[in-house]
Image (cartoon, rainbow, N blue to C red; front, side):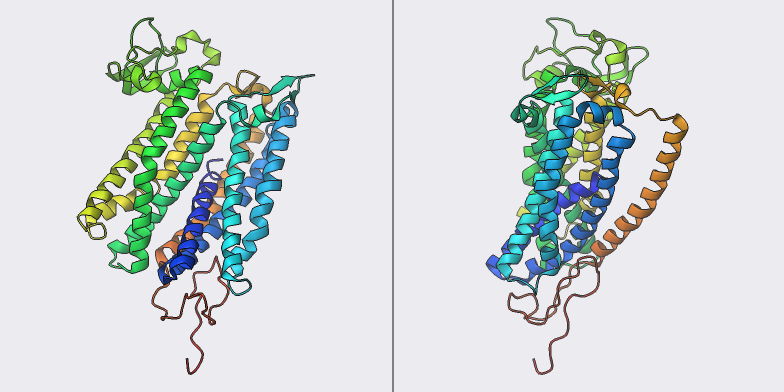
Length: 455
């Protein structure tokens, strides 16, 4: 999952980015937007392919590693994943070929429509996957008959209590991760003296996206936290390293510390009085449950989720700083020339993906020991494999994933380092350019052929 989640996050963001680029190109006929489209569509194609491959492996795990869970929850999780294939994956697959190879085969309008459909497919896929995962976090709309869940209200199943917050949070996270990745690519070229119109446009769009979306993401995260406190209070207690609830007293915010599960306390805690209550409940004396209110077997691992949550939040604060610093430099007309800012933007390139991974670990480990919250325990849902079988298969997968996806990601970075093809002549990139071959999305070679003799 840690390998897989990186690629859908990039494809969600890049697909929408490609829609914006092609739309701007059709609207303004400025060549730099077409050049940026041809540049990023190659990266999108590689990320899409690796996401599909790793996603197929995950689907098989339902039967191999989680057979008891699949039998129990299959009447709900099975249809939700099938809806994702029917409404999203088929849509993406149907228009992907037109998007990648159809520049000379279809008109500009139809090609733009194909790009929109691929982007829509990525968002619809996100909807169904998040509906399935959210139902496991906050199950609703079902009954249990003969040790198997039976859906009683599909609207409640899909639009379960945490679904809107998770969908918004993940979608914006994917856009932020993509914006930071694009911004880092532009910063890399600007630091090497390649300050071309396409590179500057790419950098400005990325920094603008980070500036706008980071505060929105923080607001969504705050609302998601209120929802989690209502439906998964033990998770919030573990995230905060909070052990004892004293009625009538406010909850301090523990900035740093080390939750000790055995001793049932947070060691070396650095606290800010009242701030925990204000953030978690929006009240000065708001209360949250302490972990000691739950039996030891029902507690998440606070040692892990305490820190993964702070990694996610810390990276979010750095994103906000990046956006505000970029706004200040843009106002001073120094956005493309400040070496320190460009280095900061470059190092922030993987921050969005790391934040997604930290947030995912917080979400999934924070609901333990439940695979379906308060309905089915994780230990019960697992298949009956030996430790040796699981260890061997896990090691094989790690080695193969590092090899296959490592090569794929390295090739992706190679294309990013090459940069967009610019300055191919005034006709290149225009809508009526007759000398362009169909774009080859996973090729780093030039897509423009020389002009015909006499032209």
